[in-house]
Length: 57
Image (cartoon, rainbow, N blue to C red):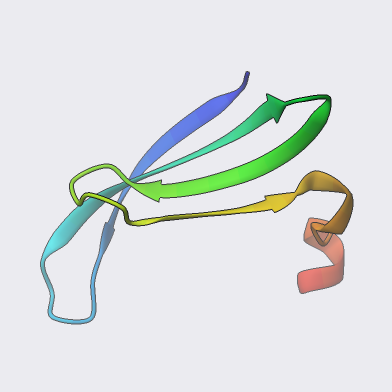
């Protein structure tokens, strides 16, 4: 699993720690983004559905 953590400012100016990782569950890879400072603050999507970085520009 590859992961990366980054501190990002929120809309109110406070900083939070966000982590992104690719996780495999039952043979399906998912891209997971989570705010590690808040409970239940995460989202996941199958990597097959993720947009390539150059497509988001």
